Length: 142
Image (tube, rainbow, N blue to C red; front, side, top):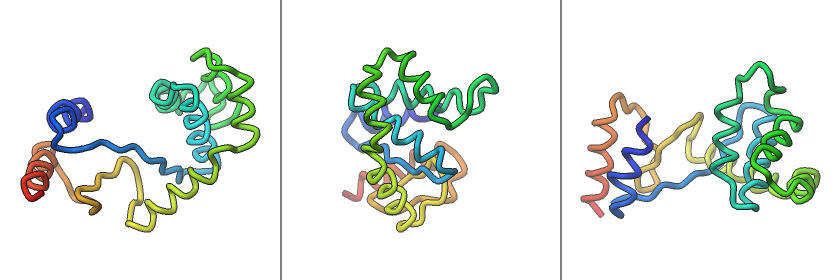
């Protein structure tokens, strides 16, 4: 996995920043998944929740991108279920999730993961070395 290498080499050294943004484009279920992760974030458990979604999205024993699965993940992480349920029922973060998708689409994002260097969408990267070189060159030009 390349993310830890990028974190260690570029983010922890201050050369680059890492930003996570929702790009819920697969279905209404992906919007609901992004909302659920944001509801978990309200309780300080975004990455743990995020990882559960991604590791289990194709789990045949679960209902997929459905509310029942999201509630199960919240229980597993021992979230406050009243707060989580209220957040989900009220679609507290839906507007932010939809806005994030619209912003990404406006700059040409068409899938995940996507990389922006100095605000420009990067495409056509074939190797990690090529990505690392592009990051170093962008940092040197700052």
